[in-house]
Image 1: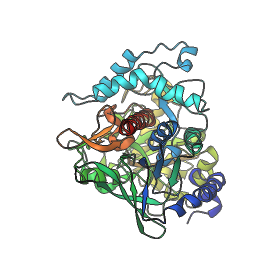
Image 2 (image 1 turned 30 degrees about the vertical axis):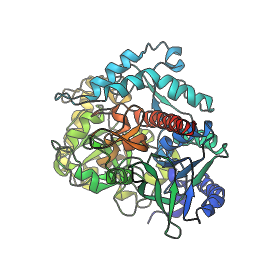
Image 3 (image 1 turned 45 degrees about the vertical axis):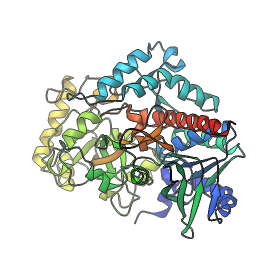
Length: 522
């Protein structure tokens, strides 16, 4: 077992988060007690307290509506709290300050080009137009108004013509907390934690009138009744049966896939919506990563983390490189699943150890939870020579020695004649160093189920559509449950998941508020 002191310092179990968890439990205790009634009435029920649900809740709170937020976990934030807190935004001051010329027209072309394939399948044109034109206002200006700050420099990510990846100071927690605080300032918003949504309630006319939930502390069913329900339950990449069921037909199914989505991303919202006739679209549009590291803190061995070293080379079970490691997930994932066993080893030396990255983890957590972990030999192999490293990793020593020697020669010459990595792009990946300073490291990687780009079908107002394409009265959806409204198509521009979750959440909240206002008119 991993040392308890180490676990407490890991990114997901820091003392700060433990204290926050305790504060949240104290905060929500009175609200939870209200759920002792088996029936409650509200203006709106929002299912899910992730970033999409919080964004919708904020919009409704501004209009003074009575909002019940149903959340299965004991705290808010969902997957966003574990993220890097980065968003794809078009036309920001951070871009202008360093002379980056960007526009909705340039962004639209990037979205459509990157997310389409040869068959013509791709992003939703109307939602891409909206994102490209409104991300500055809907995302950037709104977050700045809530007191959120961005790092000075936007980062260039794959598929973008210019840098658009804007990182929030404080990462995921720094992004989510201000939105939550703004929601909590309203006396009309109530959070009901540890409540699992079971099914939608509808009347004889077919209109949604609420949701039935299970209070997990005592398994009591509670009906939250409201004329409008917004589903924001997240994706399905945490449900391996769904991941495999909707696996893209043209991709070989890997022997082992790690779960890299949030623990709430079980597809529960998809099932609830589908049960009342909602249409699911593009469920095979999955954005899975080639950088899946088995989580050292997960005793089941099924959960993974997004991790990498930009100075590493990747070798398959035969000890040979198989891809330009600097290329994005769109390319590297397809190459990974072709390899024997669907796995590879990332090799690097002691000089590159400090640059090893795990999404959501601090430098201290990486050192203590991975490299200095007493059980780290399960996840990291280390040796004073490449030949000994090969033995530790179960790789052919002579072949691996030849692979590393060839790599070092190409770094010295400044040209990767095998895969074209060196100097190919404007990232540290394309400016590598020789692997020559002992000790040497090898870390095993696997496919990582990460994000859903298909889901519940919605219109431009985030109304859920049925199988015939008609809106289901009283039902809205936002965030990853909707496949991010199709803004990515078949390939994701980094930062669009948080960005589109905010955008669809706000659109759903405003549309629901408008519908409620109309209902109140004499």
